Amino acid sequence: MSAQQQPSSLLVSACLLGQAVRYDGGHLLTQHPFIELLRKQNRLVSICPEVIGGLPTPRPPAELIASGKIVTIDGDDVSAQFQKGAELALKKAQETGCSFALLAAGSPSCGNERIYDGSFSGKLIAGAGATAQLLMDHGIRVFNQHQLEQLEVAMGS
Picture (cartoon, rainbow, N blue to C red):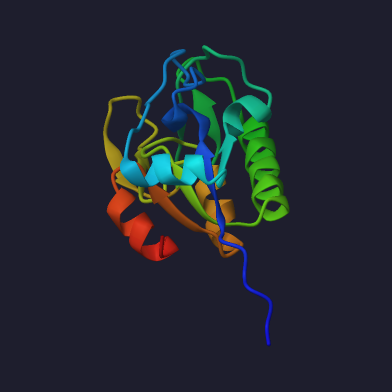
């Protein structure tokens, strides 16, 4: 007889849980019955890759540019901080048994399907942010706040 498998935890962008960690000092509080259920079950693991990577809040907006670097609107290269945050997020996901992540759409860190194009004009293009890509490369399924129904099905609540 096999031991019963522990349900997976969910790595979640801290801004989606209402923490004021976004570049503009705000948050993207996402309220949904499935998130509330996971909260009650103590299965949420909060993370802000940009903050744990060493960036302040608030901070200048940043986008991924064609060279593969992540730069601020002022032209400062913040790729190292984004990479460090991605690596620490992956480590936390692995340590806490997260097979799934719920990350903020569009972010140069957390965007899972589309990110801003690097022109700081508000245009989105296909692509993934640094953290989302690293998590996916390591087998963690990444969803954004507009995909909560798909996440719930995938996790088999």
